Image (tube, rainbow, N blue to C red; front, top):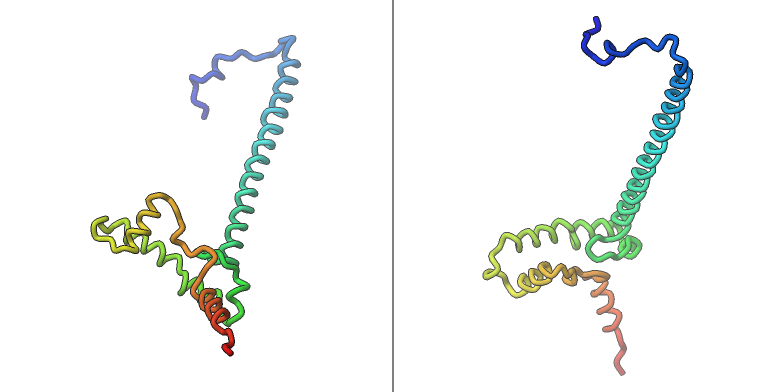
Length: 154
């Protein structure tokens, strides 16, 4: 059953060795400290790291579910109307539309860009994201325009 030729064939039996008891104690303590305790510490560190990653992921998910990715305006602003936040994030500020536009600019020759495309392309190459409407949207502009335009004339 057992194939020969290994180190077990060369070792001699420790019968009658006066240091055998010390060897057994050393083996048991080595196993206990190195294998059991250090392995538990390493596993604990790994579990903590994954727990931290899970908390970060949950935080990002919560932020994406409660704020618009494009403008950063909170859900409570849009939920004054039915399906307000959902409509805003899927129609008005759809992330995919911004991504498709940037992909379009990546694939289009620089010489064929329009004025707006050139502006966004230059900002993108400088890694400036000022072309995103951060803190602003058409609905907010409309409400601000209506509130300032409702002054009474004498």
